[in-house]
Length: 112
Image (tube, rainbow, N blue to C red; front, side):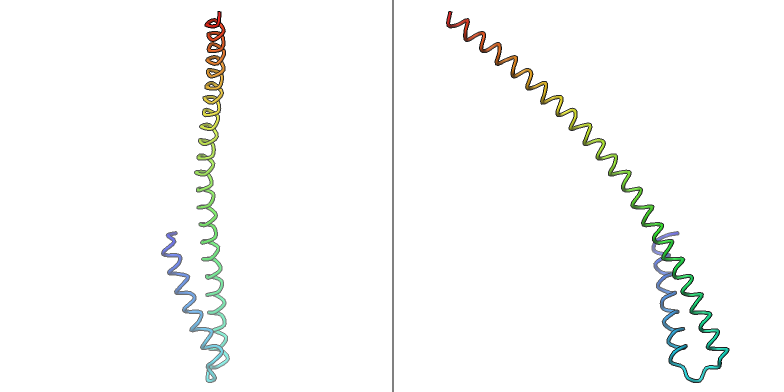
């Protein structure tokens, strides 16, 4: 169900609840049957309100789970790149050490 439609339904239900509750508690000239009918209507509206809220919660949970998959993919990508960078750094360090060794040997050869 579309979130906009859900929100509109919830808004309409809450507006109807306000009217029903106001009639129930503020009207003094209603019969017991009318009061009972308003009470049943209020109960049904509350029940539907809870159902809609439950649907909204399910939609939020679903969205969070979907976004967490994207975040997990980004984390994996970052880890892989960090590993590659670490390997590159280690390789660069080995090359530097080799150059330093060669430079040291060349310096000693020049002294001879």
